[in-house]
Image 1 (cartoon, rainbow, N blue to C red):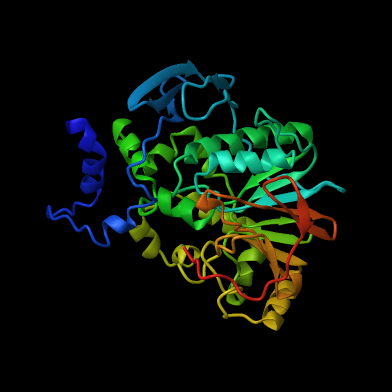
Image 2 (image 1 turned 90 degrees about the vertical axis):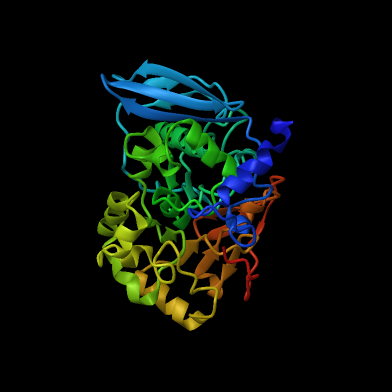
Length: 381
């Protein structure tokens, strides 16, 4: 009998305030995706550096913790148990550098995946970016993921491992995978669990850590996340999650310094960030590069956006964050929005940049021209 009510008890536990009173209206509604008590059959691996040049790999499989320890001296291969369905190759050293775009290579971009591994894989397979075994299949092309792998859906770690593996495979083929940090990466790692799938919180508890500590600097994924940039320029295109406000163009001029500031501060507690005058502007919920929405909410008109692109010396700015529901062009092609609504779990789209030709890839493998839009739906989370 007790087992039947365990999901409900989990929800109630997550809505208890320190004083012991359950606030079911508002607090429960903000705990994350629905249904909040959906079961997760498998989760992981979470891989941590251990003493003696060892790696500890942990999974939660069917509600039980599974552990494996393996040497890491010359790299390691973690075989699948549950969760991510493929073996994970962990190199002896994580290469933090971003590869330049070779002549003639395509750029493929997507954003705001939010834990939807199966949908992302379906989209990438449909356009032969990856093969049927989820391996890199795009040669010298570059794939850009413009932030927000974290939160909402349940397969966050699985997507991170997919991108981690694809980055190595693409580099070996002469291509590249660029994963940029979004606001949900920074939120999750500074301890904000507002949008985290509740079952992942429970899994972290089973593993003896807080959710953010699963991606701490002693973990392989946490170490990798702390090498990821926020700003990326490929050719004449600037990529980032939210956008650059006109008063913050200096962050792009000093791109290496800006990226280093994010990387070094990732995982710093929110209160500490907000109290630091050097870091607070990088995380500001209105104007920072991971949060800005000024291209879509009326702050900037088309002449202002065109002037901004000219000031930055780019042909276009590609952003996610503001959910359009499709990949589309704004402001005369100076802004390309790529949050195609993957988070909703039903469909998604890719952006293709091939020289001066831009198109979008649909879930069924078709390609079509980008629509030029003027307004966006009010879906701002």
